Image (cartoon, rainbow, N blue to C red):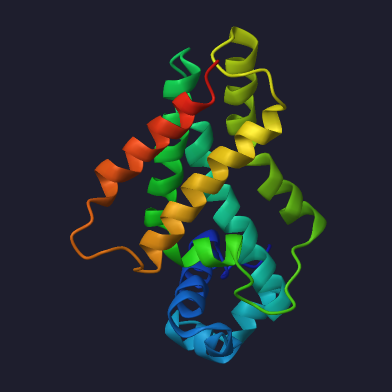
Length: 196
């Protein structure tokens, strides 16, 4: 009879979420496996069993961030209007970042010095931008967007959402700034700006 599995998916996710919180609030030095295990109510053996050590934990954290982000991006319904779809993807980007701010820093910054994601995690990160590139290509093909390289528009769109979301998450906006309305207005202006 097989031994029951004690280190399940719920524990794995709890460890990843707590690791992300430690990184985003206290920095990379706070991410000790012993502290993480204690905070999550488990043992360091569980952490090693699930992730193989700190490098595996950080790689899994990076991959988990992109899994959640990618699922949100793929869930955005297409309207057939490339400008509207580009705005919807931008809104989903912000919602994802606000839902998992503790993962955002590991996904898009050098939160852990020396960390380089594995090939599989890197590919997962790249694939999350597929919905954006698809919408841009559709907009170019339909004539809604100027006939430039799809990557140029996609990176421009990504740059504006990433910049605004980073400002918001880091608390760098004026106190009375209405981020929700201003964010959407900026997305719409940027998307319309690619029109012919």
